[in-house]
Image 1 (cartoon, rainbow over the protein chains, first blue to last red):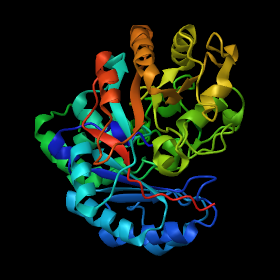
Image 2 (cartoon, each protein chain N blue to C red; image 1 turned 180 degrees about the horizontal axis):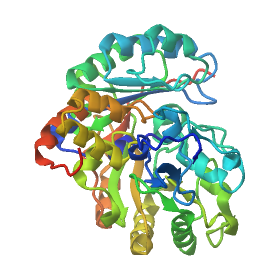
Image 3 (cartoon, rainbow over the protein chains, first blue to last red; image 1 turned 180 degrees about the vertical axis):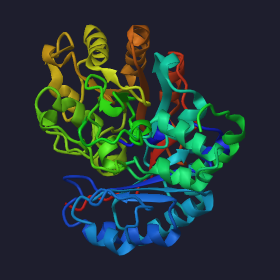
Image 4 (cartoon, rainbow over the protein chains, first blue to last red; image 1 turned 30 degrees about the vertical axis):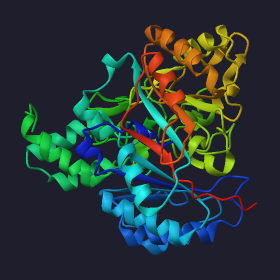
Length: 215
Length: 241
C-alpha cells in the first residue's frame, strides 16, 4: 500500500496534491494488460504529472529516465503510481481515462469533496473508498506536524525526518534552492508519489520560520 | 545494511537519508546500528555514497532478520505473498475483485506508520487484543498471517520478537454490523502501544461518492473521525480474464 490517504497538510495544500494509481488486478484483468496500461501511461504523460513511477522500472520522473524507456518497460502486471499538482489536471486525466476505457482499476487519492466534484463533472461513478481514521498510539514520538507534511508524501516512510531538516537547513544556508531541495527529498520515494511542487511550496513557506545551528 | 569502514570516507552524506536514524559516526566513519536498521535499503538505493561503501549484507535474507527487509523495503518482493509491499491490493482493485462487497467493510491497521516503525511486539499486542475479542478474520493473503503462531490467542512466533520493521498492516474484512465492536477493541489497545498506527476503513460507495451513513455512524460511535482526504477507486476496472 502506498499510504497516500494519510498525507497530512492544510486543505489548500492538499488541493494541489492528487495521487493516481493504475492497478491491474491479478486473476481479473492481469493477463495481457500491457497495451492497456501503456495507453493509460501515455495519457498520464500527456496531461503532465508532478511525479511518476512504473513498478517495472522504479525510477521516478526526475531520475533522467525517458518516457520511451518507461513505456518500453511496461510488462504484464505493471502498476503505475503518479501524482498531479492541480485539480484541473486531475479532471483532464480522469476525463481522458474514461474516454480511453481500458478497463484497468484507477484510484485517486486526494480530498474527498474535490474528487466528488470532479467525478460528477466528468461523469464517473466512484466505486469504493478507503477512509483514513488518522494516527493513533504513541503519537508524541512522531516528528512535528510541519515535518510530517513532507514525510507523509512518501507512503512507505522512505523520506526521513532528518532529511527534511537537512534540506531545510541547506535552503536556509543558501546551499540549494527550494526546488533542488524538493528533488533531493523525492529521491528516496520508491513509489513515485512524492510531489516536488507541493514540497517546494512547503519549503518556501517554512524556511523563514527555521533557524540553523550548523552551516 | 552495512557500511564498510575501510572504504567509508566519513563524509556523513548518507546519515540524513536513513528513515530509522540508524547511521551514526563512529571513529570518524559512518556506521549502521544493526538493531535500529530496518533493512529498508534507502541508503543504498539513493546512490548517495561517493565511494560505494554501503552494501547489503548477506544475512539480510536470513530468517527472521529477512522480515525487516520484506516489511520495510517497498521494492522487495515478499517471500510469503509474492508481491511487493506489506498488504493486499485492498480497495485499489475492489471494482473488479469486490474484496469488500455489499454489507462488508475492510479494516487496515497500519502499524509503525507514519515514520516510526515498530517492534513486532506491538503487532502482537494488537493481534492478541483482537483474538481475545473473537476476531480471527485476519486477511490470509497478508504476510502478517504467516507470523501468527496461534490464531486463537493472537500470539506471534516467538523468534520474531526481537525484530523491528518500518511498517506492517493487519488487514481484515468484516460485516458492517461488526465495525463498531472491532473499532472498540482497537481503541482499547491504543494505550498499550509503544509505536503508532494509522487506521483505514474500506467501504463500497453509494451513488455520487456518498459514504454509507451506517459506516460513518459506526466510526463516530467509537470516537474516531475521518480525514478529508481518502483513497477512492474510480470504478473504471473491468474483468477480462
